[in-house]
Image (cartoon, rainbow over all chains, first blue to last red; front, top):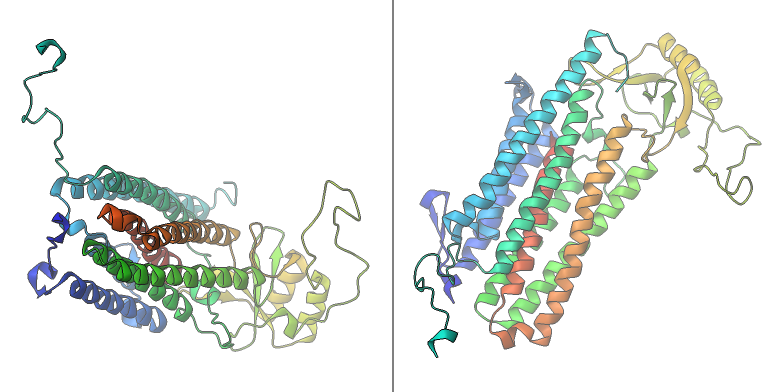
Length: 127
Length: 325
């Protein structure tokens, strides 16, 4: 079967695995480390990271970036996106990423606008 | 004779058919496209959550104060239980991908074992989510809803939360719950709160150290605590209803929208996990019966695996945007 040809390296070749099974456990360790970092940061909430940087607290940027890292490894290694053709990968990933970014941008922009309308005091609670 | 043979002259050329540019089977490709559309549905929900949160950015509930429970452990401990749930789901993703891997090697016994572990992981996750819902619906401190729809909570002098049952004594009331069997058959109402607003006013007057906390976030990102005089005035003038727990209409933790989105998003995700477990069970029995052994192809396990990993993928985002950010 052709599916035996798994690509066995992650982190751009920094870590190479001997078998697909070994790669699965390696990715599990990576995901566990990332989740642990998120949970520990979420519990202690270091003061240094509570500063705003480009509209959001640094800690929230870290959470979002770590989430995207986790999503990448789940898709690429658990769902075997790494082994699919370039065309299938782009059809799936680019479509979703573009539409999601567009939607998130529009809704967050609008939410911030509604908040500013409340704040400037012209409307108390109307919509 | 030649007239019955269709010869288009395109055999072996790009548009001659039989070409698989994506090198994936029909079923697998369609599973990927379903996942894309489902991902858009979930991101629609999460973006709507973000919209409402940005709209009420100064008074949104703090997730660490809401989800603090662990079964059989009574101290507040935020994050721990949800981290456990996340780990269970990631683990069941790992056993799923191990099942797919064993399927490629046509090892029936291994596929069966890993599929079984995946199903168990999924059931533990759904059970945990049900428990989390039950805790959230029950609530723990209780609060007062104002005429304007805002939520007022209670704290002591040090800022620790105080539950209604710690300072309010319920008085006897003649009012009974209106059910369809004891009143108009086409109307009813939900369970009456344990206390009336007047009970809370008496309780607040007789406990000097209890203060009211509003939903407004101050510069440090904490909820604003009112002075003693202001606390009494707010409850007396604006108090309208006692709220215990959360449902789709009211929410003792703050904005009702928070509860609505919690029920909707984790509910939709939990429904995905549930249907994933059901599909996994079907595939599990097919594996046992030897369906794929006879086909010499375990691709069905791979397809259901894609769906299962997607459920995990969504949870990673729900975890971040509901519990962390």
